[in-house]
Length: 214
Image (cartoon, rainbow, N blue to C red; front, side, top):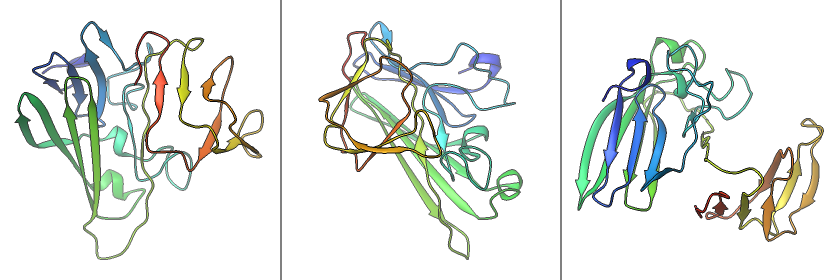
């Protein structure tokens, strides 16, 4: 389908009524709708002109998360991905996108690779799988993340499942984080929060403060 600023996007619709939008630019999921509401958030100042990554939804960080030797969060979020496979399993659609190295990526990270990103939509879930294949003759290391923006009420939101984790609190000094331990059952956000949780469990519960538990 044609998305914002005429950028191409893929629209997935499940037989259970959920829907997801994925822009090929950045391989970015910008919307995940369950009946009547969108669980993702796109910033009001987001641009869709390819001059910078889409600010919101589920952007990619690859081959670097955060700052480092190349540009912030790498290059996967500001390149066009291509659709290489799609399927429908009992009313649940899935699509696989591909990103390969090119002149732009090699200008900052001189490796040959293939990234395969599979997105599966079900009635009450959205799942993603990212597989990185080294197609070069030399080894490389990388870091990756999905930098998800959830729609939420800051005052009402809370996260459960982090109790007991070691913490690195980067507020007020990001370069000298304070070590600690999470003692709360639910982490809340009364003000600015910038905290890293070490050895976090595979499953967390986000109460978005709007009536949804994700």
